[in-house]
Length: 489
Ligand code: GLN
Image (tube, rainbow, N blue to C red; front, side, top):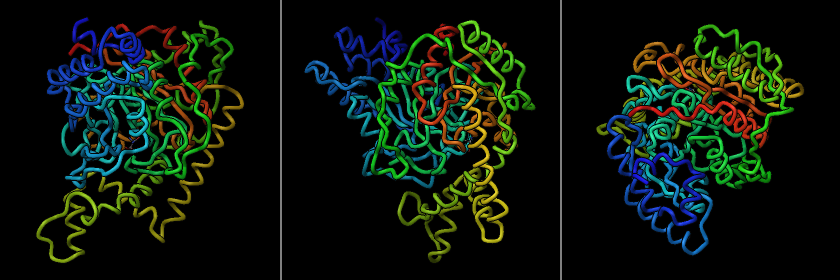
């Protein structure tokens, strides 16, 4: 096997080859590090590359494999969105304000990956504090879409999706507050799963909007996403919102059969203005594929869909303004030099340390929470959130899985939407309701535009129904079989 072939392996294939000694973890890790060396200058996915750590972990994985005590991800090279705390490795959230911050502890998901034997290649770029849909809000660099280097990879976990698509890792972790795993997965032609709120511990995930954030996997196919989810999911007493519910082996839930499954298509989603006809066509084709395979597709209604975006853009900034209050130059990272007194130090640190989008959200959120406007904005948005949750509950009385495109368009050009925040916010029109409702959602590739840009299909399931969601996604993936295409880089 050549080095290039090794980098293209799926996690499940690599697992088998590692177990039977056909390849070693060191060999696999070296091959991926070599690919990073040659392709990273084009993609710009990594903020930090942890080469020495990766080699050490790979050696350790080989040892456990030889001893027969290997964990489920032993020797699998993975990369991590840079807002998940990694002990001893800088965690920046792609922000200047965290300059020099080296977490003294691992996030729970990292502890779980480490215990499972995964190899960490490094930390991935993102929109600053996960606010954005294109990676253009990173303070450090713009990650490029491997399918077309002049385009964005999506966001905020854009580099997680790009790294998987470009074979710079076998799997990645991202986070999703309003679509940040699913939308980049769609734009880069990979699989991305946002779990149910409470399924995966948020301990050690730098908070953006605590009632919406979830960590989840990005991978080359549904089986690989299931393998990662089985490792990172589960109760954690250090996260008060983590739910104590058994974690199935999600991989054993997969079956290539959709017979009897009922998919609901929200009428409101298909009426969305600005949907690219290529996305609509790919979505219709995906529906036909499912019906041909024996599934049933029915029309459903999510009547409060129109209110999801405004509600999200009050709730998320409100929580962000409170979560980000801690970055004041005292406890973490950057502190503005030469300030004249404490108040000025706060002001200079925050205005110099945060980028424009983060400042916009802090201002919006502070306004929405202010005494005079709380009822009009924050309270109203919370009420809308309840109505959206009820819409989903009613929909799941009628169907097992809700089906929609993941994003209204394919990846756009770098710079195309930077001057128009509202256009940028519309990227998440189909994804953010799942966060408001706390339900799981997955994006799987379902076709390409004329320009060879990937299109994603979103499936949303009921709370804690990741097993049936993964099963449906896997079955679709098997039926559609569109994985032969690879980005040319
Ligand atoms: N694009 C959305 C936002 O900017 C969602 C981000 C996310 O899911 N982290 O808020």
